[in-house]
Image (cartoon, rainbow, N blue to C red; front, top):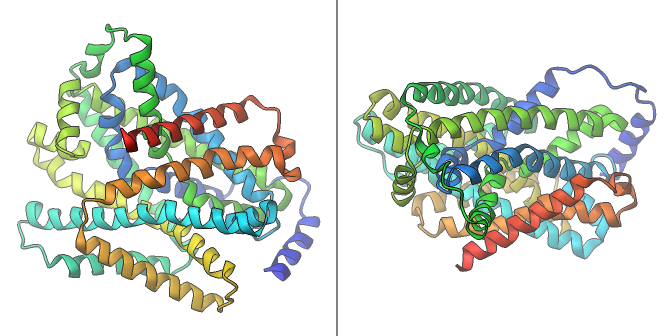
Length: 425
């Protein structure tokens, strides 16, 4: 690792003075970031964000872009502040010491890995339901189906990180088109929906309480922190001293695209369904696609919904695998073991396959609680750790003094407090 870092540092010293023009690799990463963030959670966002009423949704929509962009830019800058070629687990150790590095790496892994398990369960359920209800066939045994699906995704993983990002960027296109077409399909069916609550100005305590509990929903619907470390490492390899400038450009374009696309989809849904119908969908624990398919009794939506969900889950699985495997490899290396890179990759892949397969086969109902438990840790790593580093790490102090730092810190504290409250309420 040190030899690699030294060779990269020498190359950065001779890097061109100007940043090169936007290229295909930048577009691929932009779509890869979009693909990791916009997944299965997007299909529940209209319900979770719209159920609070019109005015909280409007304010959340205004906050979506700044809190998404500033938080992920801060985490990217944190990874870039380390030595060349080092990922987030190494950068934490470099800045905060060995013990802190082990703790953060452990938390990083256990924040992301449960989400990978959730996607394994959701993927198996989606495909099984599609085979049974849409194709009219007998679904195969759950254990066999789960093994085939997870093994297929891990086969993509074995092709390498760059292949994963390219695969995700390709999967983004049909997903964007599907979301856009669905949102446009709903336009003639707009009934005003959530506008029914626009004339009801909520009292300040009730409004703040609704907003407080809704912020984590918006934060994690756009979360792509698991892929940020790999993204930052690749930017530093490609652009050297210009990595921060180019990575900020990629992040900005990716976030504008995801916020505009998702908010159009959200508003199209909440203008079609009434608050009572959104509450019914939440009670039935259905995604917005499933509820709309039942609401319209439309065979096209009924057939397309699971396909859209499959693409959404699969690409998010791939993006979260990068972060989970990175965390697990970091934990192995911090124990003092030094296996060969290929051996470590294969060992991690086998471990991931076995655990994901077992959980997907068991289909535990407790899985939602695991996601909630991981939420505060993700918020702490995404929002608070980079802001803390700005005050404590010399390489990060050049970013001090900006209002965005205070904004990110406040959003992080709000998200963590709301998640903890929801857990024990």
